Length: 439
Ligand SMILES: NC(=O)c1ccc[n+]([C@@H]2O[C@H](COP(=O)([O-])OP(=O)(O)OC[C@H]3O[C@@H](n4cnc5c(N)ncnc54)[C@H](O)[C@@H]3O)[C@@H](O)[C@H]2O)c1
Image (cartoon, rainbow, N blue to C red; front, top):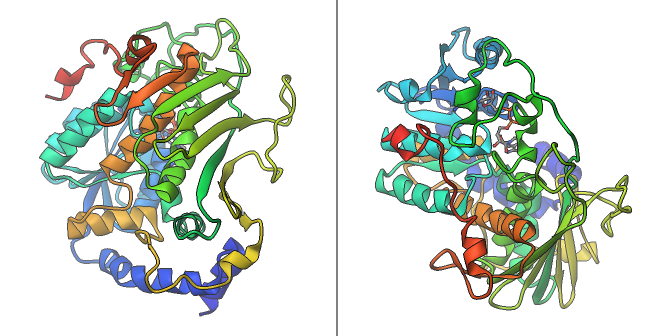
């Protein structure tokens, strides 16, 4: 009770809500923390997030391999994770296909940059490994279609690393919206952090230990430019989609969870800051508008109080979060707080017949529960694909500068400018890093 009260106080979520969520997930978490039959896992992509994911996953599984195309990262991660891995140093690899050949590995954690997610996930699914993959799940919409099929055909578990779904605060916001506490939903306003504008950049010698050609994979090959590589890859279209797909993958996912809608039918967007020639290519600041079949509008915009183009701060004075607007009020939620036009709307318990959502209080734990139960985790492949799709649609609208119409069933643009839009749905893959690489 003391622990639950502390969670309620720190999250702004009422005690009645915390109480129920704990009751629902306690048994399942006990099952995966059992010392019997711990799964054996490999970390592929041992940078910042992958190493963090693996450290957390060590609560549920043993780490037998670490794979990275930069040996410096593989060595550092293997050393850092050894202590929590009961003193056993994982074996190092540089080619993930060798990891996938091992029969004694049950699970992979994919912490590579976005342009590598799909090939590795498809290879892992074919090798019957369960997958915890970082977000955004894909680099293109076409990749998502292929991945959904491969994961389902091979009956493997895939959890997308959109961990906001395993937060009580975000779940409560979505349940409140779904159950009419702000009346009929009209708008979802998403504020994303502004990206960085930078450049021009110069090429440099390739650092020892880094296989730059392999790192670039299916993307077009360039001379080595440090800003293209570790961590800042997210600011280049070749490897990612800027904050639209980076933070967007989290917040658009929550928007979808609250609304339960299919794909948007219309999208348009305007960059409000342009890249510097020779520098990062994604837009650092922008606005996008998505329209859904039932008339709900999503507005997505970046916030930057130090922008040379004028300060843009949302009504809550925050840079980063989601505001649901209904006919009777609003709910604001982000990683720090949940708020509403009147906090009284959170006080009263939801009725017995209320629409309730999947409960997970630990994103990696929920994945390992699924590895054991073979039931879907909270963010299965379809959820990851759908949330990434809306981010990709926004990015395509920004890149084309056109008002586009989307057919969510066929997963293609239709109507005016469809051809231009569709030219971004799929990308040419540089050989040998195309689908044959993992066949
Ligand atoms: N869920 C979250 O909150 C969250 C937070 C941060 C990052 N991420 C996601 O995690 C991913 C990684 O981001 P990061 O900031 O950790 O990047 P990073 O650059 O620190 O790490 C990526 C690592 O992958 C390695 N790599 C690249 N290609 C590889 C390949 N083919 N095989 C093996 N290793 C390869 C790189 O050498 C590097 O060590 C991104 O997709 C990002 O969106 C998620």
